[in-house]
Image (tube, rainbow, N blue to C red):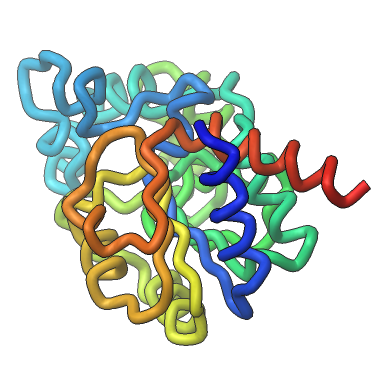
Length: 247
């Protein structure tokens, strides 16, 4: 990547009054978590049934055991660690350069890297609850359970993640709208911008836009700065440059 690209990014960021980051599955790829729609993504792998069907609310209700076979094998990554993208975003927030991280990811890696104001549109694998009594459980309990994870009361445990056929949480949408209404810079990273709500957020935003994605998106022509690189690679290089220049 060019030094000019890093400097352009740095200039837009430092001149923003209210910068917000919006990220998708590509943010965690460099942590070893596959995305969904890229060539090697989850949706391009072969399954007896489409992943969209397996991780739906109806499938969870009627074929809970099969849901959990897929969920534990393909959506839980207990050993994953934050990559340079997560760390750089936490660094930005710590320096007062970034107001919020809005994520479609459910892996909790933004928080693990140190980000505090994280809005999780699709929930988190780290929160799980009994559908019968409401008791909470962590990811480790679900991952290590045999078959269907059960509560001490005998109820079935459900991940606090948004499945297909379920609505996005209202509080997360309201928090996102709050920050986007005030933002003058939107940094979009690791998302194809091909599905709701990512496409709508980008299309309706009226401030400056930076897109960081290794493959093209439908919104590239609207970006004030387009960065066609893996997001961890780019943001890691930016953080290193920023630390050196501020010593």
